[in-house]
Amino acid sequence: LQMGCWTPLEGFAREPRTEALWSARAVHGVQDFSRFEILEGGRPRGTVQWSLIGAHNVENALAAIAAARHVGVEVRQALDALQAFQGIARRLQLYGEVNRIRVYDDFAHHPTAITTTIDGLRRRVGAARIIAVLEPRSHTMRMGVHRLTLAPALAAADQVWLYTAADLGWDTGGVLAALGERAHGSGDIDTLARDLARAARPGDHVLIMSNGGFGGLHGKLLAELERAAAPAGPGRRR
Figure 1 (cartoon, rainbow, N blue to C red):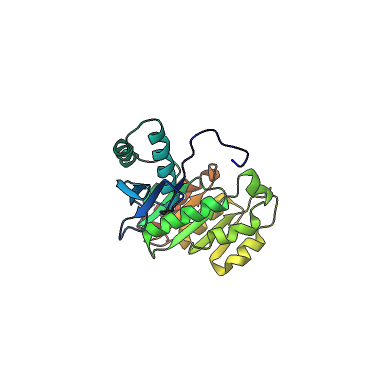
Figure 2 (cartoon, rainbow, N blue to C red):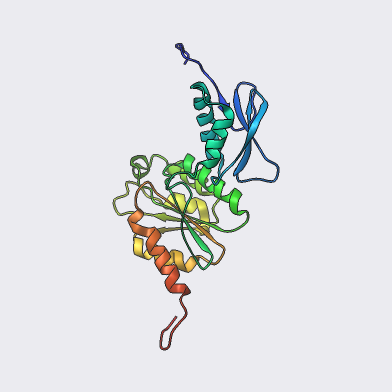
């Protein structure tokens, strides 16, 4: 941009700023950003109420409105479209629930996305426990590029489980140590599913983050939770 910009330039920001044409303002009492007000040049243009949560989704909404308005879409029409938008798969997607333990799937695979995802869920669930489960699967994660910023990104979770694959290119011990007793490492998917099922309790939110399939952990965890919740029959040990 410093070299020159020959196309219209519009800024957007999550909170009102003088340099941003488009901005958002939280609606009183709604902390998870499932409802927020859109402003154009500081003037209110309408309110969005949708099924999505998290500050990152507000930023995506502002970018979408700015782009739509640029090609002639009226603001009201853009707001209506956003309110009808159901989101995409793997973005804080509720994968299943057993015994009031909710299991979510999210594509977060770098510290910035991890931070915003946990923050979005925290704003939705309040003081309820969040168990964050991460597979460092992307190339930069596997190489350890983010090892110094990973612990702060996970810090808002009540418990952290880090999958330590045998071919991971770095030692996760520093991350686990920085997070203290609430952090755990596991090198086996089946063992991880069993450990998570034992650790989770009713009312918890288990947030599984990976840009891959995580070895089917989501389904395996739900199966373990169902097994644990099933009533013991005659002769069956619990």
